Length: 530
Image (cartoon, rainbow, N blue to C red; front, side, top):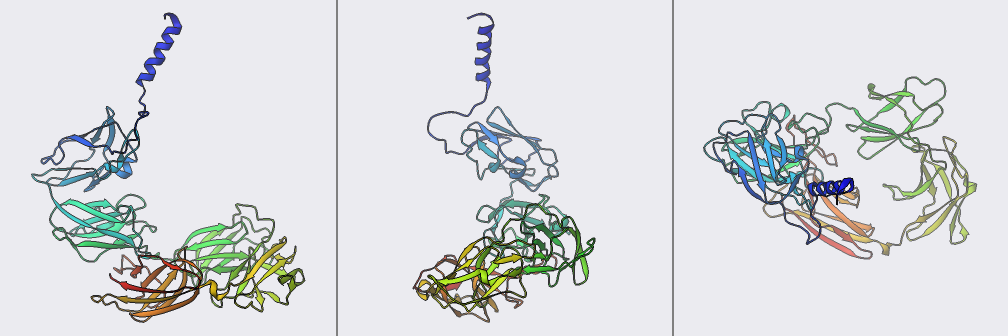
């Protein structure tokens, strides 16, 4: 074929041949890329090159090299990394290497095969600028101090004992990153003693320099000649000073404010509001570090400025900014009081008034007398009396405008089910906690039964171990057991302080979930083995 049409077809064929495509068809590739050779060779001594070439057995691609390529000890400038000829990785160093030092290039997580994206996990390239390779190692595990969950993807750092700048201002002598189970190994280390820390580094500078970074430390020095398995407990210290971390107006007009530390008496004060009687009704969480401030009046409230203060000291200036339209109808749901276990109504907005004549409580089809009143402390709570007996249930019907909120909104027709299941619908748990025969732990303690969301369903303060707790009328489901070494005796977990050298309170979590079934008496023997 000749002429323009033939030339166009030939160009199309040549273009398709030149394109790099992932292989199609055949069995699924599950093998990770394999390192065939390296220049200089892996394990070389007397290394003085500025260029490293890694030859793989298949076509590859790179992914998140800046995050995943870890070079220990760290370099003053990151290298350039590129693919050549489809299956080679070229690393060009942009900073000089220290003399007589072994360097480990953890590159495997950044290299994937082109066809299926299989990761060359665990692949390392090691060279030494001296006459031999250092061969010592430090290993262990990092966990979250509060939950005992694995601390995945955090840096573990070793600093020379002569480095006075340390993790706050200095650079580590060695570092690595924990795996999904919180495990770590620092390999090819020189003989010596080091300080060890773990850091959830938010700005990737290897320094503990941001208030939202978690840290773990051990006062003991690491001797690389030892085989000790290290256990590091990650925590976030309380902020040095109180501050506002977040302020957001909710759709129902409550102002959610999050503090850096528990707040005993934070309050809002208007800066540019004129006229009217504006009050704020705060609703605090258990830890008193988060509150929803409900305004008594939303008239002309948008974009007004307020000072948030604590003990007479102004923490910040905030602007009440509305991001979403308020829902048209006021809603309500049934809630249970954490103290007396009685049921009440919890409304979506604070109430101005209620109209009992538009509220009907029925058992089957029979109306039953009751009273309803707005709680004097929390105007989103409607107290109902008398309470229903165990195993008794009823339906509460709220006709339109039975409830009116402080902003003029009312409810539509609502039908809510009240009451509690019979005792036969619950289970009982008898828990005995003790240490093994070789361990003694000082009290006091707090033992907790945690629900699916990690919140305490039951808890008990304990002076010493062993101890037996009996918890009755538990709803069926899976629970988690947690024990807190309550060193300061305040009845809850307390974080640590890196600057003061104070470790967080130790927690222990039962390895198996506790399953509660209706009409079952469950006994659990929990042996604490630190």
